[in-house]
Image (cartoon, rainbow, N blue to C red; front, side, top):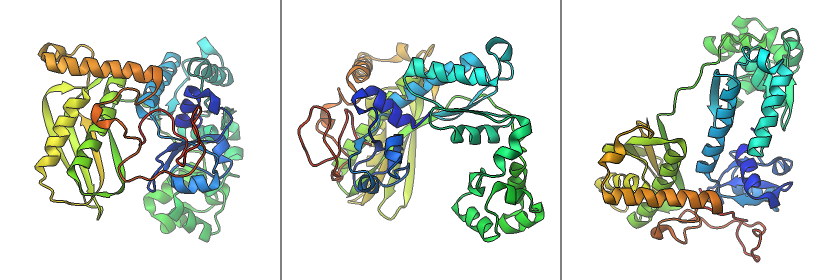
Length: 409
């Protein structure tokens, strides 16, 4: 998918179409998780500090993100892919490999299949995707990247070298900044340059395994097959505070927020969690985790929070300065068909019904439309200060970034 998170937000806020949109945290430590191509034209990219992104593109709209919604859209897109072929290997929420070799008789050749997929994604989800078609996963991924946005690129077997060899060495899988620096020092600027260097030379420069790997890719050799995915066994959320905190009440409040987010993801994917894991990172970056297995699997935020809070309180931290906390649901099982509902008491049923109602409200009115009373008024992580941008639709001027419905990440 093209600029997936940002595209889903534009779908939800059509008044933002054609404008620079950034999805990510808005505080001093906030980072960009996705940006529309209008924002990318200013140099904005993922993993960039939001503060820098706003300096590059001060008119950008900053939205906090809604991972439960993105997971829901991703699930629908992956189901669409599986209607084309059962051989689907997701790489992330917004990317997957498909082996369509068995779909030709029904849907036509590679171009027809690619256009069919692109058309259905747009018609059914209102977002665009780019498709790369090739005989190997490596080349198909490169073709997809180079067809963005909203494009289709087919690389026939006879044209693989013509496609690969002019590309910069940084295009190869496994070439990060340090490896690229080593290769450039050797005078290897393109994939073609690298392909014509003996494998032993590469092995001496970057290591035996990496050298062999890069040499094979440079000749378009990637024997890996598409492997259908196994279901995720965990999901969660974490938050880096704008400033280090030492108040347990602030941590408790954030744990509740994270538990609600995690439970929403569980319900959106039809899973229950057997185990809850707490993550705490201190100001010195020391990180600890604690886990507890539940008697009955759950997808209820309050139950996740109760467990996470118990684990946190058991740490006995005395005014320790905390940088980050996280809540993770593990040991996931399918909700459908489980005997869990028979074991719930009236109180637990009431909690789950309330959270399901909140899910429905969020789908209709946006994330955060209904939330626990303790989280009312929470518009950004504790300690975060608003950045500067323009105002949201229908709002008067204010000093912070343009915010959509929901709770900032």
